[in-house]
Amino acid sequence: MGTPRIPVFAANWKMNLLRADALGYVARIRAELPPGERRVLLLPPFLLIPEVVAAVGGDPRIAVGGQDLHPEDAGAYTGDVSGRQLRDAGCGFVLCGHSERRADHRETDEMVGAKLRAAQHNGLGPVLCIGESLAERDAGSTAAVLARQLDAALGGASQPPGSGLVVAYEPVWAIGSGRTATPAIAQESHAFVRRHLARRLGGEVATAVPILYGGSVKPDNCAALFGLADIDGFLIGGASLDPGSFLDIIGRCGPSAPEVFS
Ligand code: PEP
Image 1 (cartoon, rainbow, N blue to C red):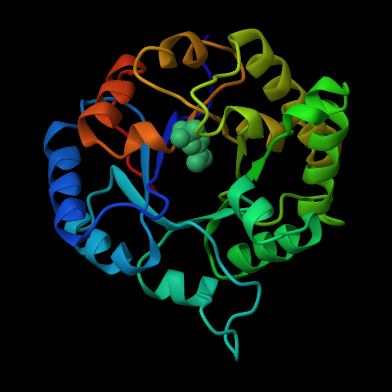
Image 2 (tube, rainbow, N blue to C red):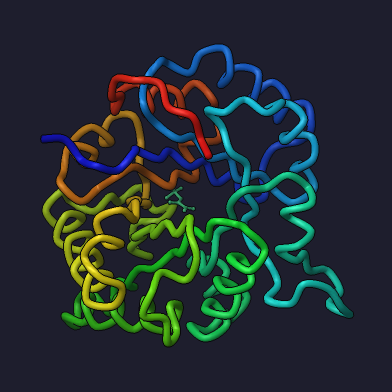
């Protein structure tokens, strides 16, 4: 029996690409996406979101999301973008707590939780990013870190905090480093995350939530990770910047029937 979850392939462009690149990228994905049951999520920089949404043109195979959001819907927050604005621009998802935001912008677990609630309150599926640092892994505290990050983000919820929740396990030491978690490490962490979600939100919810792996995923290492029981797709940074490489990863992990992204 296969996974009950539809695979997700998310492209985190970070602070890369210009308008013309984005248009060419989307056109190529739309033209060359192989048939199969999967969800593609494009995460452009804020400025490119309207352009990308227009280029996607309502194609049901592709969703667009933001890389971050402010916990408030509106107000005097210079330089920030709200979930309300992302939704208005045509986004369906948003990253919450990417390790680069946690490190570079000092986002705490509590702030990430507030962002997650803001996402859901605005009808956006939060892609909750969690993961341990190398020091935390070496100290044997990976499980404790993941549990803390999940608990803080989920707050007091005993039910899934709205629909559309996706979790991305991204060991910090693997992001942009060229160092990927071994399949055994990745599966162990993903299984822990799913067990923890089951404790918090019940088995049915835990079974339904896609858990993505992120950290130096490339065409030559994706298939070994994708085959594992609790890995439901990928959040990809560097290797998603080139549409050919992103399509290559998708093609190597392809399932079989078409699916509409709701
Ligand atoms: C990321 O930014 O979420 C990421 C996983 O980056 P990379 O694939 O470059 O490691």
